[in-house]
Image (cartoon, rainbow, N blue to C red; front, side, top):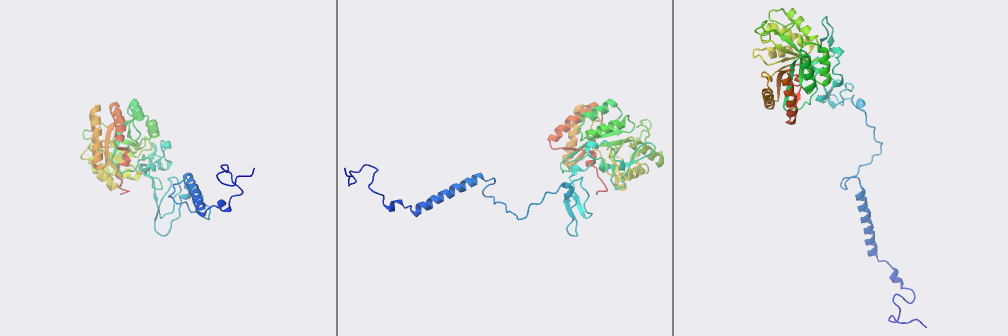
Length: 381
């Protein structure tokens, strides 16, 4: 049978002969739309797979290979550019740069490494008949600087707490070293026992330490500060011998603190030679603040001795509540003038109160620092 010759009789989907050539052509508009869709799809995928945001321009490739990052030791001795002074930041352990370079150091990095803090710096030791004496090093370093405990260098409120009388009671000394936070400064009585052992334990714990020197009170000898007390009646030579005996009892301390001494510290002829000796040896003088007649700060400034003065005795009344009130008073003083110094003794109640108060004060933004962080230093202006 011949195929039907009209569209109505033709089976659906069949045609007679090949389709016209015009039916095989693809319009230019469709081609453009198709290519545009492909480009958009590829671009979207690239954006999704990028490591950086699309709005961040890609890095510009360099024809030169990247330079190797120098080590701290290699980067430290930077040669200055030009004739003026240069300011760079260096590793504290790196070699010293050129003379016209001003070194900027992290304040908390200054001071002896706490891991070896119990070991004396031999350059700061002078041998004597009574024992090792502190002395300035040939390069000018002072025990005040080398044995100081590091601190942040921040401008916030700072409180220094000094607990004295260590070495008198073995049990009390042990508990003070064990319980007190390392930021608390410890003062050793020159007449104490086993001072070398306790000094090492305190320094390994991180404490800054000072040496208490007995000075004559007004009611001496009815009230006796102890062995080798410096007195107004003694000659300068005798007092310096007594001072050097006290200084030779231990090492690794930043300075000395008076033990009693209201009469002695008010007498310029007796006190001046002591200050000159401390200046020679690069030591701090801490006045406990118990005597309004003390001329120690004026003489220290004149002699070039770093000095500090206590603001309050925290345990004149040995009761926990009263001690905590005194510590709160220190905080108020520090917030008002920037710093405060509290003086106490190694009584059990004092040690326990200080240990708990320090932890709470830190949470309130108070920085607990060693006494050297608050001392005025005439050599630094």
